[in-house]
Length: 335
Image (cartoon, rainbow, N blue to C red; front, side):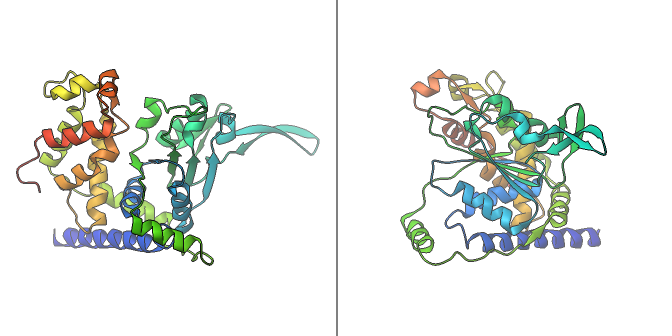
């Protein structure tokens, strides 16, 4: 038992140290977005995927490219456009001739990387967006009747612009549900913006060092799944998600009024699994209610579909999540 406790504590220290190393490097390139970086790392250490939402010019793409630079993983960027086809993502077969014989050869698309940036994913039609579904969920690609595995770790980071303009296609609910988190990037404080302006209008940017490789990330993902979670914490996560679903016995009145569809089972899983990673990143080997509450907005905002009454009352999914956190009782112990 003592050995197991010692190993667990050592694992928590290693993951917390890895977080600090990544943060130290990313702060050279990205200023004032530590909370966003923590959520992205939480998804990375759990094997989940991240959707990053924000208006243009808030360094969404720059953040992801900088993260890919410090991870010793293969990186590909896919610029989503209205004319992008599914085969442009997954790959296609081409006819080759060698030694007088012709044969079909599969040419891998950009999805065959370990860190994939799906840039402006809402600028391509749902048919092409769906090309990511199998890869994100099953970690393989099927093309021309053959299945091709993807190398682990496999991490999809997608960006989208929340401003509804011509040429944008909202992601279908099934696609949104594949993302562990929907992380919202907001405007910087005045001091942080001054630092960004000063840094980006000066000399050459500081080079970033590689600090994590694939084996370390996979080891972190295995460690995260071994973190214990108390039943009352898991039950709180489930009750929080269940309260977002209209028609359930304990659904609050405001959910019945404003929500068309509530969060899925994946939301409960994401809250608990993300809580495990968050605990380890803070040097703890147990999940607390505070971990679940901290992750709730990023886990639930894209899984709650509001209705016409919410729109008329100017209520969005974030407001619903905030009210759920106020309404659903947390365990008295808090752990």
